[in-house]
Image (cartoon, rainbow, N blue to C red; front, top):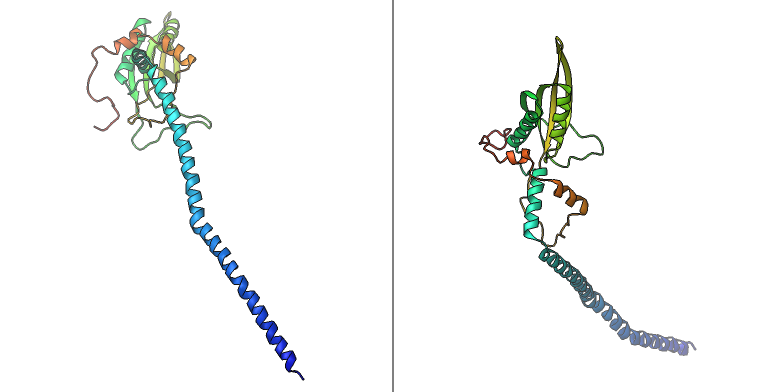
Length: 250
């Protein structure tokens, strides 16, 4: 009595298995396509996008180099040499201590100042300089010279004006004044600490892709005002030779 039902169940089972088997092939094909896309097509797409990005960067760099080459072709070598010479007077490429002392001597002699002493201020080995105030950055290294003078008040002011009118960038970090009176004569004694700045030339050339920094109008005006003043021309006179850095051990 139950045999037909069992037969129907078996028939349904076979039919279901046949339907499942018919779906296996498309599912396998779809999985294969996904694997191909992920492992073969996707890396190629990423590589293609990367190559296009590199090409865009190379095009931008080549255009920048063309612009740089056109700008360099318009520069005048004689003008550049003159600007470098003037900039060297403002900010020497070495400490130029002897030239600085010569400038101080000339400024004192031109204003009737008696130099009682000129001393170099050295930082002891292993001792760092005092930290700068917050928000301030030291743009260039400096050397310090302590000068002791004797003069009257008017001559001292004229000496300071002459000192600050020199081409080289200098500053006064410390100033002590003392008046000595002998009878009807008053003598102004001063102890000045003069800061003279310098900046070494770069030892390596910049990258060829580095853009050219043009000198702006304000900087051109400064360079044009810098001339070979007597203090600067005196630096070319015979000076003591030897070590350029008095603070070095050798």
